[in-house]
Amino acid sequence: MLAIKLSRIGKKNQPHYRLIICEKGRDPFGEALEILGDYNPHSKNLQVKGERVKYWISKGAQMTPTINNLLVEKKIIEGKKVKASKNPKNTEIAEEPKEAAPAPKAPEAQAPAPLEPKEEKKAAEDKPAEA
Image 1 (cartoon, rainbow, N blue to C red):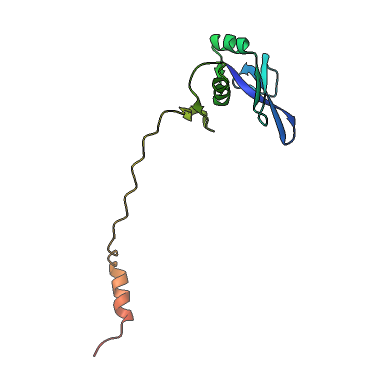
Image 2: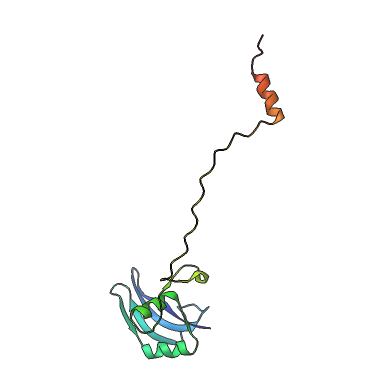
């Protein structure tokens, strides 16, 4: 499956990215089918070949959540932003509110556990005998 993703270029501590199209499992630093544009995160400058992006999407290419959010923000494609996560299976639409998790219950006061028979004998032996 084809994917549109970012490939980092640029110097150390000065990232600059290319938008590329390549196989989904392929290393983004290897060969790409086509370079679709570039992105500078410091200046937030995005230069994209919009027609080519739309062409590849029409052919079934997927986008990473970051690419989707950049293209939606710059109004190159229509749609909603998605919440990018480290786990790709856990991608959600950003505008939809999550269901609130139930509040944890307060722990109830517990009585101390009864002593086992051996411990009762030891406790009885430790006490001085009353006369």
